[in-house]
Length: 273
Ligand code: NAP
Ligand code: COA
Image (cartoon, rainbow, N blue to C red; front, top):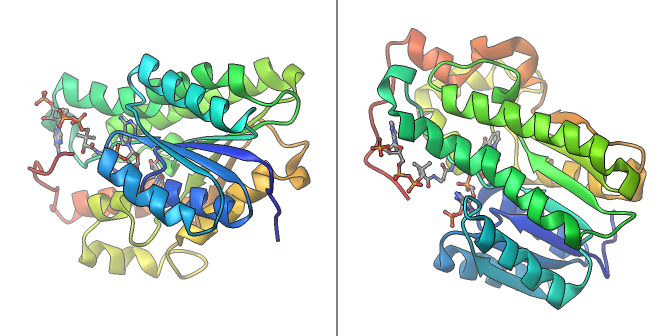
């Protein structure tokens, strides 16, 4: 449906899940792709997946918290592909924990990845964006406007991500750059979905999604393609949920609220990557 042949797309955090789904959809639509995340192995595996579409792919290992590292990845994409047409900022970290169950550093870690990381990606990326014409897309979440227990770090971070989006939509509109946010609801099979719910909680949640199903990677990718396309040429500063209407019910139906009510507050995970 969309043709991005000849366009250059950079996806920060593009080595897995929703962000890789978005990168994959742009690659399938003919774009050259640059992706960056921390793990070189994950970046390599994702790059191999993207190359199957036949276009150019550049993978770089970079932590969005490290301004110099993410700047270098953006510069490499610019050197390889020229001006960047679409910049996606989707790197994020999350774990369920009560505020009293997280250290100041735990809170800071998520804020640093999601919020400072998004500022870094956009601040460093601006010089390489096509002017006029570029589209910037932040990956937000319903935590941005729905307060959710066990999510004080992500709620604060994603609310900040959306205000960064709105301010830069105002500051960069004159350059012909549009800046928007996508807020996915529960997307099946993803790391975020696994971390924030249990099989039992998922059953409770599913029947309460107005459109009666969880989301897919394609649901998110379709919105990203639309936002980057000429069909969205007068849309900027918008936060658009792609969630089957799930967030209309507010935080009461979030997996973390259900976990709290069930007395099933997840314990400290030993997993860390
Ligand atoms: P995911 O597969 O874990 O994706 C996160 C990506 O970010 C990974 O590729 C990870 O790769 C990268 N990343 C993490 N920390 C990074 C850092 N410091 N620097 C650079 N890259 C980093 O999770 P997901 O569930 O698909 O989530 C993707 C996005 O969707 C996030 O922004 C999330 O908040 C949002 N979202 C997800 C859901 C959902 O249902 N899953 C719902 C709402 C919003 P490395 O480990 O290699 O760094
Ligand atoms: N509960 C409470 N605190 C936790 C926690 C949990 N489940 N998991 C990690 N933390 C704390 C750590 O203890 C540490 O705090 P401390 O120094 O006071 O002990 C702090 O968070 C940072 O942890 P660390 O493992 O050093 O961070 P990292 O930068 O290596 O990894 C994470 C960042 C913790 C967010 C990690 O889970 C990650 O990399 N996630 C990426 C994938 C992801 O979350 N995907 C879903 C996206 S929605």
